[in-house]
Length: 222
Length: 222
DNA sequence: CAATAATTTAACCAAAAAGTTAATCTTTTT
DNA sequence: AAAAAGATTAACTTTTTGGTTAAATTATTG
Image (cartoon, rainbow over all chains, first blue to last red; front, side, top):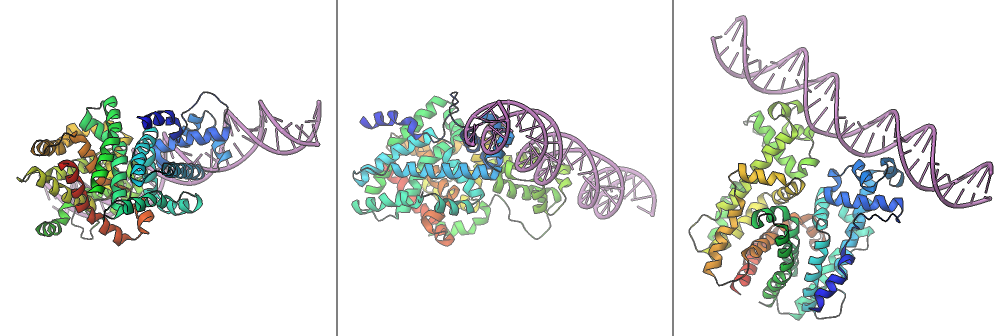
């Protein structure tokens, strides 16, 4: 399959958060930023500690306050970045000129690859928006993300190309649920249904590409 | 529909957490327990403050330590309770003697009602297990919950009654994703796709009963 | 009722965590 | 090279938060 080759080639492009690299060519501010991203995504705003972020970045805690005035500040910068990057990545997968149905299939493949490379991001975003829903408003204004466009765009296409009278929002929500839940609920699901076998669960996640495509198609085409 | 009548009649039975009641007939310990449940579910272990729980319970912070030695202790008691209650409720919906397919349909209806009455519970459980996966092990041993039974039970039935060669775990995960995600992602979804209209979103959630049943059936029956 | 036990409170303590500062080291500018 | 600006550190302060205690109040029991 050509597509899976493309997936492999571009796998690291999907990574929103750089893994800690030993080559120290990035600036101090960048190092703080990256460390903060990793810690915040893993532990959330409330669970993260400034000291921990400083340690992760390999430097003094005071520097975090030197570059970003407060934890709140640092978090907001990081969150805004992750949020907009994530949504623009998602939107990016929809900009080819193939049929609507094909586009939907490519979307599912890419979305699973994207989350596989950033398994904590969707849950992180959902949690933080639950914690402080006001953030979402400013996020949508400041970042050019316009996340509502992401799926309504092609779902209008799907809607018109395929005979289906279902509210497209039900399809979006079902689709996202099927894609995100196996990642968000991994520790639970992996233990209960997979005897905590990491490799088997990883395979399971990749199998989902075909499963979800199949499921959505059957539903849309009746 | 008879079923919706039953749903209305038993609506409050689904509620795992009592809303704060003005009638003060419950014991101090119970009041603390209930307040802790509400706060922990809303803010999580890390986000919750002992003072906040004391305020919610309408009493002194020292009392929380008098009845439960530590925050950790209080949290574990509450979490264990919520976890096992939730899973036993879920399992409870599967104990009628109707066909496997019918059982699946009833399950979907009941599950949505259950989460509608406890919208934060699934995400809370997932988050806390992510934070401390060790908890899950002890939870499964101590509480008689055995959550793995919940769906494998009837999915074996479904599997044998209906011709379908799909790994039932894919069906479980898809199903749970479709059911849980609209609740977990509510603030995000409601804002992006529903102009923050609470009533419309509530209706959307109830519509999902038919949508999800439809979707699962189409998938299983091919 | 008196004594004893259980409950409740206000005030306090210690540890953790965010945030600050002044002094030092490094780089850039003149 | 001297001065200035920028980056970095160690040590410190403040605030938050979980936890304690001793005294007061209430309930229970002999």
